[in-house]
Length: 286
Image (cartoon, rainbow, N blue to C red; front, side):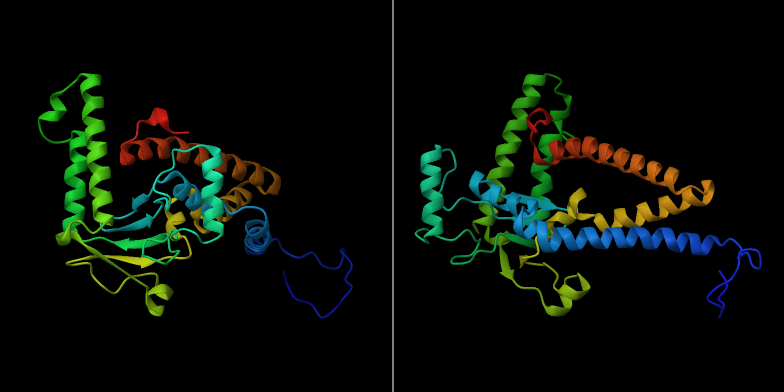
């Protein structure tokens, strides 16, 4: 704990006092070193040469002909343009392989939302009018308002849910296709300062705004995209347990257990939230 100019000192001549601050510094530094090694490994090697699950998900959306509309806040969210360039996805393996060959040889259009572009992921700021229409359709599904909530039959409920599901799909599809002129949108790049600050300067008053997002920042709404927050929480949890028990081993074991508990909670409630927000029955989730 105390500095000294002597390189060799006998244990009998001096015993340094115990320091909680230095113990915390050692444990936190160890966590940060391990985290940096993992970040470098996954970003430099694994995601480049083995697999990148986030980009694979975007490819899967396109191959499945499914677009994803995410709203993390009332008027802000993310959009993954997964519309197949071949017009359909219900095909056999032979035709699918031929479609992939056509894409590789540039014999078909590109996957991007705009013509002759590859941009499939966007940050979106939607107008209040668009959000109100979205909520109006979603209310018919959840049956929080209106006479629909008086219906107790499961068959009738399922039929209502199916109708609301198709209505929502039709509305979002027509919105992307610029059908609703009063709820239209524009596509643009973020300014440098907007990217640095992580915020938007323009308010989506008349038209919604789609910002090109090559960084696939939609992962921020996933458990996958909260590594920094989880790392800070793990470091603090480990340090608190170590301060109370003076045992790195026990702190490591309890930190691992709390990670598993949070992963279980996220998985359980995440599926229920996904089923509620996507209008898809929980039984159909993999």
